[in-house]
Image (cartoon, rainbow, N blue to C red; front, side, top):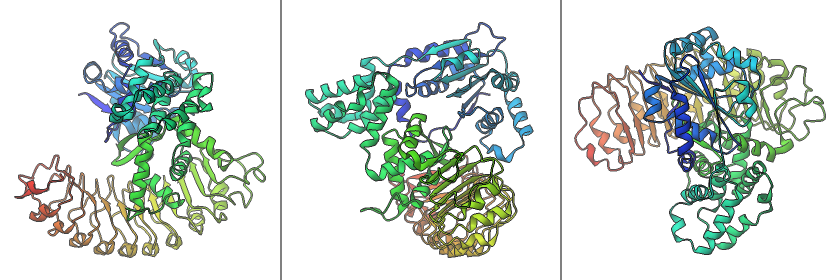
Length: 630
């Protein structure tokens, strides 16, 4: 069985499509090295070395997805983006997630190691390790101990900016990624400009070639500048980019950074703020689109504009705009959620722009150095007590890992301007109470929690707009959750033991999105959900739902209803045709679903009807062909 362990993109990847030009030769050379039948007794390590933004990831993507040689040769293919701080256990957890499509936090390290061993043993595998930084041979040797069980002919494809990395891992082959030729660079540029290129006069095209030449054959630089110019038809606009002093840097590395800065300077002011918020998250992680949009709403960086009725739609538009200019990329589905990534250089740019407003560690002089810090992205935890007013000016706190209860969150409650908290920690009940005392909190995300219930005081955060909880042991929510009158998003995915929602959920009259996904015990929804009139998204994937309450048909603003892998679901409620704004109905793997309601033909706005693997469903209601937008 050929097995691929990588999330599948749900939209065309502009970054990959554009880099194809000029990389076919390199692609074939690398594939030849990976499948070479010489030295079958060792694991081949092929390293792609190149400048940041030169297309290393895109090239390895092409190799990984090769539909002929690679898929036929390798029985198992696994893709992992390697954190900048190399950690063997973290890398194993990422491999586990790529293989199983499950969150590693819910499994012991022993189970993770065993799963990887079972997957690789006796199989010829391809492991892509994207963006490796470590030159520590001992760390690499420790990692290799876990993956040496593959069959002869197994290979590792590694990408890095640093040639020393390739030497440290004792690469069997090295491929240095060269710059694109002038012709290929121009092709990439015109691909992104699109059809408009045909209507541009010769003078403007000549200026365009001069701009492309200044990019030095680096694809990322070409892409971002092409996105700046797309849709612009005045010669003055193109000359302004060409004549920018930023592009006069002598070496290619600085020219790439200059191109990114120039592209940033052309963003509308609201998109600039949306972009810099992205720097709060660590590099290299697949990040959740909905959580990003919720952050934008919490920090008031987006507002209702003409033609939009809700902030989530504005957020979608801003997200798509940042993808369009390549500031966000690799949009794909990951554990049922739309996720994205940000190129490391763009992440560096966002933090550079924020300057002293963002802190990625606790300064030694914690009293005087935090005067200007508004955003805290803390991966390495402080090891000493913090002053009481350490977070005085904080707007956002991101904490990942470590035991930092007393050190951080006991001080966060004193922050008068704090809008968002992201805590990937096992927090104690005492610290949960401290977080719930933060008076103006709008966004709260907590994962790796280990508790069966949450304090009722959570419902006292009157300003809370988005709640994202990941707690595998959680049995119940506070009964008073209905007091959260401003709550817009409720995400309880991976709360696997949660069996029901409180009746008071119907009192959350601003609720727009509910996510109850991933192997949950949830078997029914309360009838009170019919009062959530503003609900637009309801996802119940991988739950034990047997039937939906009839009141669900009262949710006239519902646009997306997903019941993927609800194995026990037998039928949908009559009256489903009342959901006249429904655009997506996902019933994939509802294996006991026998029939669809006849009035489903009233869903005139339905774009997506997914009935894949609904084995008991024999036919569709008459008139389904009238759904013209499908």
